[in-house]
Structure formats: structure tokens, C-alpha cells
Length: 154
Image (cartoon, rainbow, N blue to C red; front, side, top):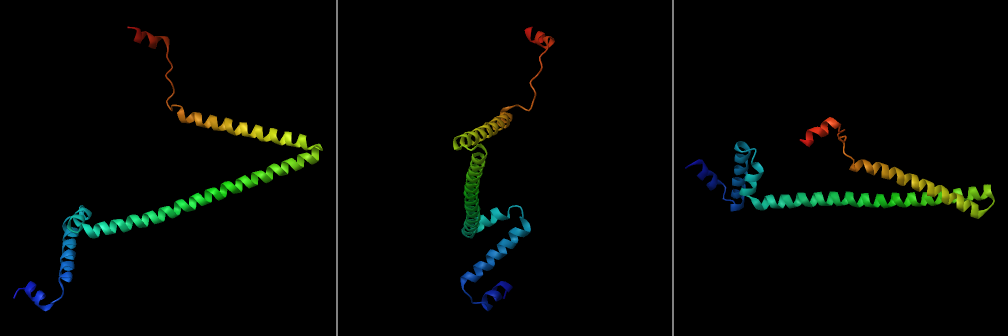
């Protein structure tokens, strides 16, 4: 009897175990002789298990990344709301301090409004100055001399 026949006679198991042995033998063959194309060949040999593994990987990645996106969005809104409430407290503090100094609510409101108006314009000016760099070329424009223009006239 051949060794393969002895193994078949000695192990009267279901066909599932023999197919798993052939799969592992095929996978070992692929890993030994075709390491570069291992994923592609395994996909061709057993695309259903590859597809299941791929779907599980995608699901894990989506769960992980959606959790990160949710945390980021929640922290963004929490930070914005805290900044907004801090700005209200700063505004009220400035108003009450100026009301004490000036003795008039109208004058304090006018001064606080003017301060925030000036700060807002300063921030917008800085934003425009920075955003201008986005559209500027890093290469300086060529400085044309009269000698250079004569070359183009011919």
C-alpha cells in the first residue's frame, strides 16, 4: 500500500478534514514557492474565506475609525462650546469692570464693543494676510529688462 492509501485507510474521517489538509498543503506550497503572490493565489484557491477575512478586516477598520470620528466630533463641539462660554464670561467681566470705571453702562458697552470690533478686524486682517500666501507663487516673478524685451521683438 502507498503512504497516501495508508493514511486514507487509517483515518476514516469526514471529507472536511481531508479538504482542510489539502488547503493547508496548498497554502504551504504557495508560501514556499510564490511568496510575492501569496494573497492573490490564496484568493484564487479559496476566495470565500479570503472574502470573509477581508469583510472582517473592513468591519474592524470601520468600527475603529467611526469611533475615532465620533470622539473627534464630540470633542470639537465640547471645545467650541467651552470657548463660547469662556468668551461670554470674558465679555461680561470686561463690561462690569468698565461699568465700574466709567460709571455708565452705555459707555462700558460702547468700549467693549469697540475693543471686540478692533480685535475682530485684526483677526480678519491676519487671516487675509495668511490666506494670500496660499495663492502666491513660490517662484518670484521674472524681472524683465529692456535687453530681454528686445529678444522677443525679433
